[in-house]
Image (tube, rainbow, N blue to C red; front, side, top):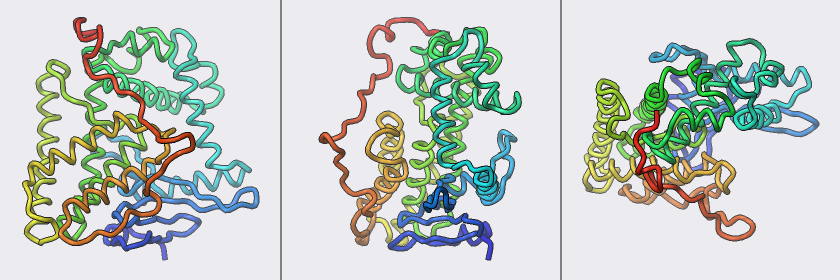
Length: 358
């Protein structure tokens, strides 16, 4: 029987991953931490393979329009059909995804002057102007998010971004009106991901269940998309009304999270503690993930999300949680202990002594 949104929302985690099938190779896997992850199972070249399609509810069952931006959000079924069309044409969807990611990175660093990454190359690979623009905007926002995180708003300029993208500064204005608009849009994306993470977690029956699932959902989102990231609010970075909008949204999310901790104390799923302190600890550790997480490192984003959600559940929970899943146990890669890349503090070095860079 095909899946429904109600069945997915009501589905509860178990000691081992649970799979619910929709048909045509599509299923959703519920991790012990409560995360709900879409998968597409298929065969290619005589081998059975699986393709990750994203986390529910950020990727819904059916496609829909974002309530804030109005943009179309492809659903899991839509992604399944796209993968099946590729298979019908003899293309492995997993390999196609790898090739697309490689192209995006290459276009960001090898671009023709005056046009966003590789005008000729993009035109030959991406059908239609609208699709080209969407990919270019993703590269732009990914680059801007990384610069804001590493150098701060005042230490980043549009000239810096244009230079890394291999384009002229004037060309950037075809996509964004100002550095402030770029920052604001990145904040909005992060808040949308946090809201989706909490909305999904709100269906859990205990305070601890909600806290644990929210941590998994949000960390999975920020490790999956480089443009979904937590950026500190710096003085003068946003217009006053924009800053107040972002702060109000963060306060609402924080209030809801603290209410879940308090609820967990009442229903005895969480040990007595200070909900505000717990919120600060959890929020701070999740925000820092974007500073050290490396997709090329030893852990996948899902492993990091699973580990954080289980470890916090262990610290807060009034009952034993059990061992870490084998998928997120201690990992020591070849060559010794993995260390994250060094993080340059915001304002460090000569940039801290320069005025704001427009």
